[in-house]
Length: 240
Image (spheres, rainbow, N blue to C red):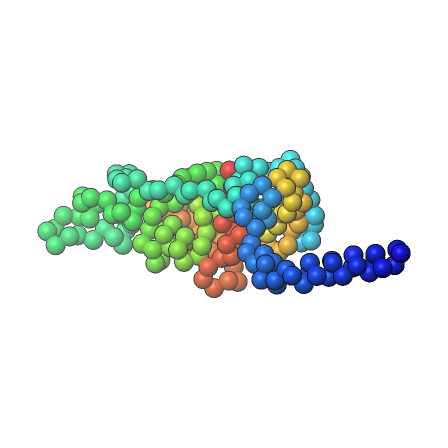
């Protein structure tokens, strides 16, 4: 009597399985939350090597990663970038912008250009004040860095704070310096503090800062990549 019963059970299971349409399988990514996959960037940490596995606690305790940022990225949130003020009277036009106006008044006497509005300011690894201004969107400044190269304020700040050994280096332009740092790509999965993480790759980010020019940060980009940096580079988890 056991054999027929087993055969009937198998038939019922087969019927149930075949009754579930293929389209019923989930086709969308998991919703953001404590158990959503996280993709983030750790700047300037030479101890992280490709393929290394570690926990979220390891990232926080040993690598300066902000757990609040990990949680935000896991929830699909991106920290808001600072907005330039409506008016910034401090910046002065660069030398090439200081030509006389048609009325004969020097440009410095007119209202400051919106290109020179301050976005953020911080201290670099070599104890210098880095000014990041709005820029013209094409050749210099944050608008170009954000829209053309897909880098956040945090990414630029981290590059100047944790450059690779031997950097920054002086450019040919007066007091213009190049900062380069390695950025590790970390992917985490699991639930909140118990997520497991792995280093899955890296890229070098370069920032150019002209301390001898009111423009300040000229540009920042990913070396070897034309155009936009990968999205994960924006998720600078140790960019405090």
